[in-house]
Length: 305
Image 1 (cartoon, one colour):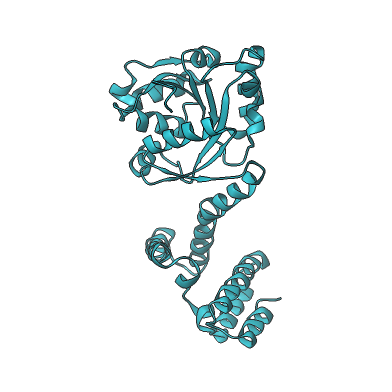
Image 2 (cartoon, rainbow, N blue to C red):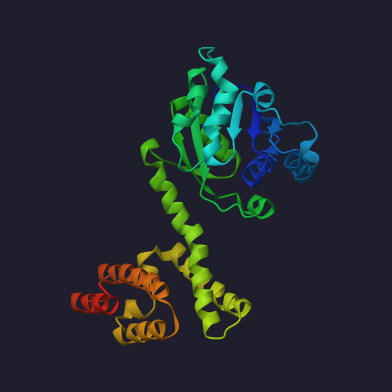
């Protein structure tokens, strides 16, 4: 970072990710990072962003013109839906081909899109990278509070862009892991499994309780407490050693009772999801040497494999 005395930042996209990043960086007065502009297609979104940033918005230009915002900066962060990144990059930088923007950086925040979506910026001479926070942004207010300690997957085109990405992440209070460009979809799939599908899994559990007469609000209270305890165990012991329950104990009779209940009260797809998760859970229990091969095979038969 020694060649860059200061970072003039432009953030394209004033949604939850964009304004969370802006707010967190605006608090770091001594970092050398100055947010110059925030752009968005929506005037209403810009209005909300200005209000959210409060006093931190005083010196920021809010605009619907992405090119204008980018012209005020030497580092552009594109925080918009994945499928729009290439178009936005092209609209700003394609007419600058071979202009060789010196010490200029363009980063996107997609967990799955490759660096190739920024080819127009790279062709114009910019250093490119992607920064993806392993974090849920359901609410900007909550995301700001919990951003410190977040792990960011970083993919870079050069040592310069790597150092800049690491510098930005440090100023966000996070840490980095390197992700190969060609393997980003799988990196992102893991994030979806741990976050998005956790929501689906909890909804599945709540719906089972609802079927047997337990109110969703009562169900969530108990199930969230259970899930939080499990997450706490995973933090301390990792995934495999945190496994508990009937499969971990080899209680095949209990699993038979589960399946009988599904067959009696639920359509087939409810049992199918349970079977898939049960088979994978039995593999963990066997790897831990908590159940033997015969018990593992019996579970596979009960679960329909």
